[in-house]
Length: 360
Length: 78
Image (cartoon, rainbow over all chains, first blue to last red; front, top):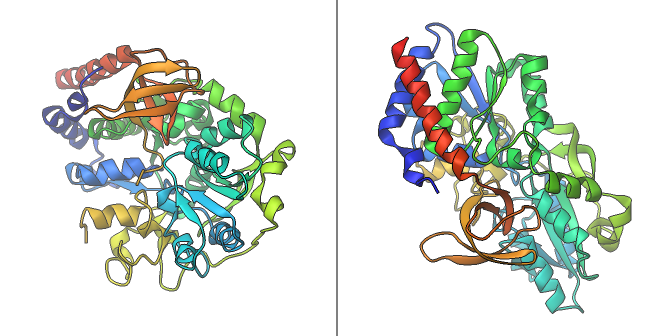
């Protein structure tokens, strides 16, 4: 395989940055939005923003799947746990605030909460203890949803049910592009979501909205080349869909994963924390799989929760309207050790990434 | 803690039905589920939360580097 260092070649990065400076418009600003926590990590960790001209801004959209799950769904997970169901989840989910408590708070009260690396581990745990009820809190975008589909199609043990909180990225991008006061000029589309969904779902952005859209990988040079490609499209006034991440993303995406998702999930309107309802943006289990639906099996349903705690500005951070440093709570009342908002909890949350990089 | 849209490249060491032993480098071997991909021993796959989500293309990785260099060269001439 090509050495990873080649994708991080500082000399090449410097040369691309020079090209970016040459291509950037002399007047006005260019605002490019990405929608992936891992892109934000690469950008922050490698100081990509400091390499860009002052008038080329890269903002972080709702790319953290943990941050955008509404409090009501965390409340449901907490309710399940307090009812005596063992809740299995990814580590990022544990400390995210619900309306009044997080899963970690529930654990402190004696609830059985178990962190897993993979949904496969949740299945193994349920198999091992057949007399105990388990629920898996399935959070994640299109990158993660196929693994939930695999396990559900594989007939998991009867004592395991699922709290499905999967969300879809293209509908959220549509919301952003239609927010006039956000004034976006281009999208860096998420590389790993795209390995699953392919390129077609993004066609609408250049075609209907005139928005340059580039699918990019996660090495620093992937991002810089992505920015370059967007600026090039803008300078030619020819918005189009381009794929920078050809080594992992193909036009059709992962067909096997798509087929499984279509068999297991129905697409419905979904609430996003702080953003409201986004049409056709959430996955629900199809009727023939309701036996695995934790809501029905254990009778939990929370219609409305407290999404934004007092003073928290996560709802503005997740759409890139403000930087974490513009929130009055950032690194004061809200820090990784005592997070107020979801963006400070998840390792994909913009506030958490900025806090870790000590940007203040 | 994993980042949830992060996927890490790993080399397939052996395969048994829908499970593969993969090498994340530096001697870290892990079992992953390969239901979603058509992987062979020796392939590099992208792994996300215990599931392979795509087979990485060596050829296209080489081509990416080449393309980047071409972009830079072409622009220098103009």
